[in-house]
Image (tube, rainbow, N blue to C red; front, side):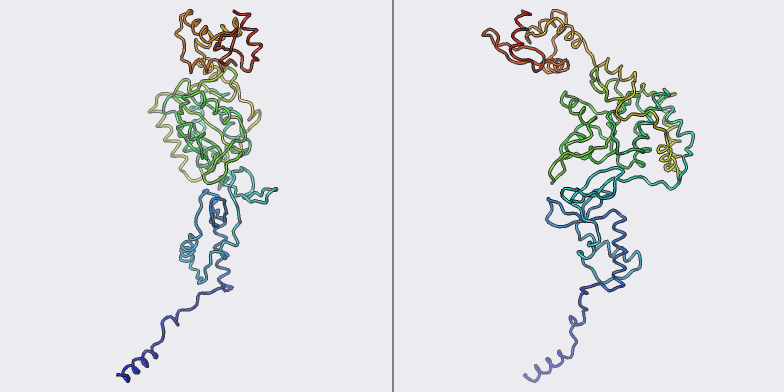
Length: 441
């Protein structure tokens, strides 16, 4: 028995160990492998990759400044294998840390048109990836097809208004880092080409564009619309409250906005977004008499009818798909003259005056006349005055809005031992309120 065991052990010792024939994993790349890895890493850079450390993550990850997306480092293993198969290169060595040493290190992202790919904060030394991208044409030609020019002639019929609108668009191309304080409002019949303009012409060229159908997409928490776009189309959005319209005014004109990103601390950021409000309604917003944030061309209408317009748009779309057409359109916008254009002063437009006039209502007219004769008055007296004039008093919410529009507020005050709800100029001192009220009554 012992002899048999000895024989088996002897035979086993003669069988070579499989483990002993597995070559050890290389700890350093060869010179040839270094060349291969350098070429791969250079390709990563050209594709927009860098490495990122953020307060929300406990480890270094990959970040693509072209897409704004984050990837774990494990992505490298599979992608490197695919790259080796595609290029025919060979490389046994792999180490994530070694591979990312050549990538730029950042702690976050910023959107900075016409700036460098990466920006360093001089105070902290933190480096940020710039997510802005510019279209690169493959030709210098500006020779657009006449049907492209006809599209704008149909789109906005009045020459002066069309020129101002095209200048506005050209300004986005030529000076994306200058944010206007005014924006176009396009009132139209359905199917005139507003969506086609943004989606098929501007989106491929400006890259950073969005279409939203609700103001909450712009002003909501964690919204990136303000911070990551050059152009946003407000597609028939409805402002159903005074608070929404008030907040919108700030978003339209301010060059900086408070931006909150998920898993990161919020802060003020520069914004470069332009808005185009597109609507089929005659009055999509309630505008004050001193409104200067909108340029409103004459109502967009069909030259013949909707079917003829759609057929024409189809011919423009066909031309845009031809090789080099979008490049020519890009160059055309880049060369369009901006003489006389002021990104901080909207051109006068009859359309704006018309919407302002439509925004007025009998209540507003009556209230202005009533205030001219009564500096301070009670809320109850005001409602009685509406009734005496043959008007059904507006609800408390609407009346509060009307008072704010003329610079008034309604507050509880004690007058001669009586507590009254008085309407008076906002911020008026109590002594002045009592004096004015006693004079009136």
